[in-house]
Every structure is written in structure tokens, then in C-alpha cells.
Image (cartoon, rainbow, N blue to C red):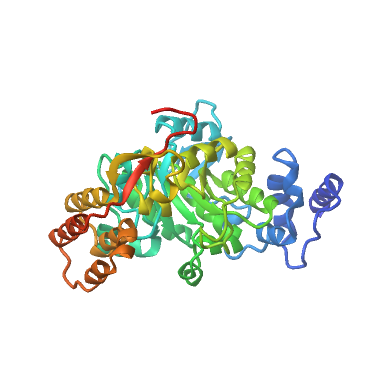
Length: 444
């Protein structure tokens, strides 16, 4: 009781506007969590989170012991001064557990050392369901992408279904650095899935940003923003059990201070890299709302780990502008890459040609043919192939809807048929040229 009263007095003295706690909140959890996450040694901004965020951060246990600072999350590892110690042999998959680091470095210093060892990649292919698969990642890497995410993988299905693993997760030695992304709502299931990809990726990433209806039904992605103790438990479970770092991809809250408290919680839980999509959960369509780079900048200034920006990256100049404005350590691109996988090499579609852009000697038909060649080398389900063809040739299909209808009518698509279709479109005399930007005032 004395300890609780002391914590409450301390917080009220620091900031008299601290929101009153709802009756259902565990006062023991609140006291410890307040000192751990809301004390001004981190940032005084965390003392003014919204009442809703206070309930999320400090709410009931929800069955997750990891949210309670009094209970240590892993029976296998111990931690002292940010140093992991091995407490068991490698698991059944032969994956080593984190070893004790005795160099005196902090967790953030290790996060930065690892990021720098990977070459500090700046231009990154975002995770896209059915769209950031191996052939597409390799095409983007050829044209300037320096890292990539897998499509979002469902942790429970991945851990249970061998066919799902073989089809949905493919990689090769050139496919690095690689983020393997999972959606999850159970720490043990997530860990089981993560251990299967651990030897083949550079980060295991937790999807905390998917805003789609299927994520709401499945209780994952951005809808875990309503259960932050569970989110914390997912991050802690992986960070204390894997030999590769844990990263997270999030969306922002409407309230900036809530976003900062959320990001800080993830860092404290063991996240080594945070990707921030500068839109809220409700802003599902990228064309309907601009991403909030100011929020990303605030997160970058608050955290001590690498931060990646996501949102409003339509061409290479956007990427540079975003990093300059936010201070982010890299950028993600998603929808724009689907139309033009050569964005990070400086190529623009006609929509973003700008003043003085010159032809780059490349068009989207060329990219489709290159993609199909990669699909022959790295087979993926036809649904992925057809999806990419539609996105890269979308403008052509609007000009020649009969070709699109012929494609949609196919029941047995082959590479030869698709290649002939592309050549047929080129034979109609129309090109979807890509352009290289020439800054105003510069001469060729």
C-alpha cells in the first residue's frame, strides 16, 4: 500500500493532469508500469497520454503474464542489465538461443551494431500479402531495393501446416537482408513459427499494422492496438528466445502522445527496429489520406533504435525527402512498387514524370517480362503472378480492356501465354514508359 501511494504521489507531483484510473485497473500493475514507462527519465510527454491509451497501457492482465512487470516472461532465459544468458540447449529445430553479451553494450547499441552490419539499408520493400513474394523481391532488389519483407505469414497456420510453409515462405541466398513477418495473437504460437524461419532471415517482424477486416476477425495486426499487454508479450517472447532481432511494424494512434507511448513500450519490450506507417488504423486507403511524417519524426526522436518510415513514397525523391524530413533510417514502399518495381532505381511512371523527366529506356512491359522470368526460377502460386501482371500493366489494360478480359477468362495460364500477351500489347504500338527525374535547374 505504501509503495502504491508513493508511486501515485510521485506521478501526481510530476504532472497533476494525470488521468484518474478507472476502477478496474490493477493498482499494483499501474504503480510498477508507471515508474517503468511513464517516468520522465524517458520523456515527460508520456505523462499526458489519452485516457483511452492509459487504459490500454495499464489495463487488466488479459491473461498475459508478460504484461506484468512482476513476472518474468521466459522460463529459458534470464536477463540482467540488458544481458541475455543461455539457460537451455538449442531447441528441437537446432536454433541457438541468445548468448550472454559481456561487452557492456546496451540493447539499443546492439540494435544499431546489427543494423550497421547489414549495411543500413535505406530502400525497403514493404510486406504485402500475396505480393512481396520472392520473385517480386528479387525484381525490386535488382532495381535498387536494399532490403525486403516477406508477405505477412499467419503464425498459427505456418506452425501447423507444412504445405503453407513451403508455398508461402521461399527465399534464396541473394534474398538478404530479409524481414520475415508474422501476424499473431499468441506468444507461444508466434515463437514456434518464428523459430522455423530464424535461420533464413535477418529480422523476425511482428505485424501490428494491418487494418483490414480479416485482421479484425482474426484479432491481429492493427487491432492488437486495443490490447497492448498482449502486444508486449509477443515482443518479449521473441526478443528473449530468438537469435535474430525482433522488429515491429505499426500504425499511429490519432493522439501523438499515445503513439509515442506505444513505440516506447515496444522498444522497452525488446523491439530492435520499428517501422512506422504514418496513418491510423482507420485510414486504410493510401490515396484518401496523406501519411503523417511529423508523427514518424516524433517517434524517431523518442526512440534509441532504428526507425523506418512508411507512407507517401511514390518515387525515389519522395524517399529522400521523407528521410530528410523525419530523420528515419530508411523507407518502406508498398503500393507504388507494385505498379513500378524500379522506383528505388530512380524510375518514375508517367503520372510522376514531373518537369523535364527523360525516358529511362525501360517500360513496364519490360518489368513484367523480367518478373515472369524470375517466377520461372522461383515458382510461386499463380494467383501472385496474375496479381502482379494486373498491377504492372494496369494502365495498358485500361487502354485495351479486351486484353484484360482475355486474361481474366483464362483457366489454365502459362508463362508462354503471358509472355505472348505482353508482346501482343507491345505490338499495338503503345508503351508505358518509365522516366528518370531531372532536378529543376540541372542539365543532362
